[in-house]
Amino acid sequence: MKAQERHNLKQNEIAQTTARIVETFANNRDRILTISVIVLLIVVVGGGYFFWRQRTNDKAGAMLGVAMAVGQSQIVPAPTVPGATQAPNTYPTERARQEAALKAFQEVAATYPSTDAGIAAQYHAAGTLLSIGRLPEAEQAFADAAARAGSSVYGAMAKLGRAEAMIGQTKYDDAIKALTDLSADRDGALPVDGVLMELARACVKAGKKQEARAAFKRVVDEFPESPYSQNARQQLTMLN
Image 1: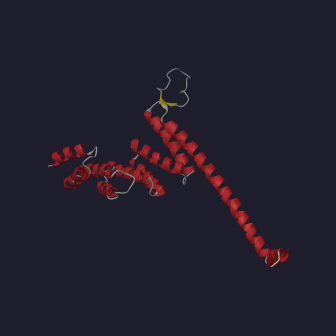
Image 2: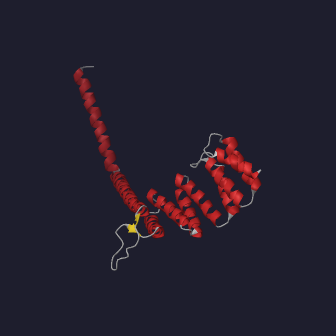
Image 3: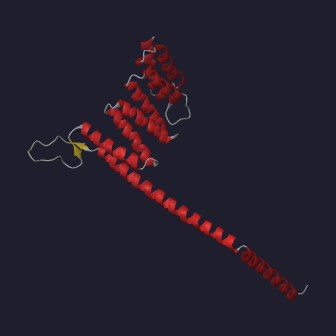
């Protein structure tokens, strides 16, 4: 086949293909335009959502940082000079600082509940409630944090904190069940030996010596290199 003929055939193929594309577009113009608009909307909305989410996370993180700073503020005795006021960013007592930090953490958790910072703030709020002795509120706050955090480290820590709040209210059976469940999760975020020690101490407080011995013995047998191992041995000796 001569070169010119091959060239003409190639040109005809291109022309035919172009014609098919034009015809297809003409016959499906509305459908193609609709699909194009949908694709464009997906790109725009997706990009906007990503930007909004990133901005929300940034705001939540900054707000959490402020709350953490409140919890670490200096404690300065209240001024005794008439008319004098408390120095900025200081608190007259530990309790006053804790109450201010609690309010700040709760505000973050309420404003940005689904963000990582909001979940962390909920956990810290619960821990603050526990430290100031508001145990029923702490138990509920830890439960809320655990529900929000799911399988993350905050979820496991919140479950542990909730157990501590229950122990403080002498709700030993509920605490023992929660700690037993945590100790069974060998792939969880918390070290099992540490959870077993908390479980054993809860059993001791509940007067369940046999269960306490079993928990301490698991630490000794299953985690001989654990930093808790020596203490667990001592506790076993005292219980025998």
